Length: 225
Image (cartoon, rainbow, N blue to C red; front, side, top):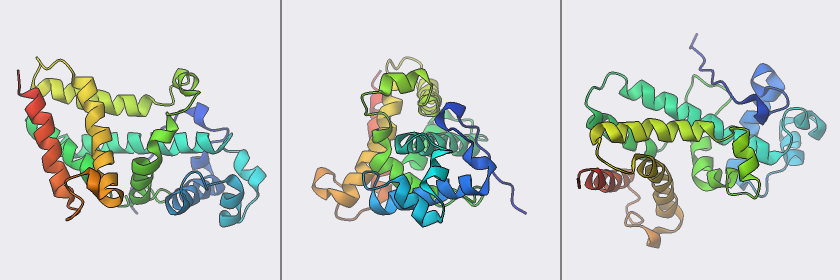
């Protein structure tokens, strides 16, 4: 029997914890599949209920609206990614090698993690790339921030920022560079697959080149001092 990974989520994101029931887990699994397939704009609780075989009212018992569900999914992904970074860098002493590993993890296509049976991380990664910014590019971002909905993203940026500072304590912009690495890894992946003229990787669609680009960007920046 494989160990199941459990991620503690902000309780303000949901009305009822989806991880504590079979219906809740189905809501998470099927919402990821539907958002990946049709996009967030076309996604509704009515369609989700039909896909699961339950009622729309049943889904509203778990999430206030579809934006809260998106916030939940994106926050879950950032927490999972922070765990992956910790797992893959735990036994590496050299901060430069650790930072290179982080860049690789950020820019590489994610495979489904069997330790989380109700979450397809591969599909969720693609959702975060194409839809993730919709979690915070809203008119109520300040209110959402008061509820700490973005804490997993901030925590991840802090981990990467601290690692950048380990590589060069004199570098002035570790937080800014950390968030830039994350967003740029996603943008370049999206451009490579959808708007190839906006990137240098559109012809071969080689993720390794995105990793090389990010390595060059990051280490050129932090080694200037």
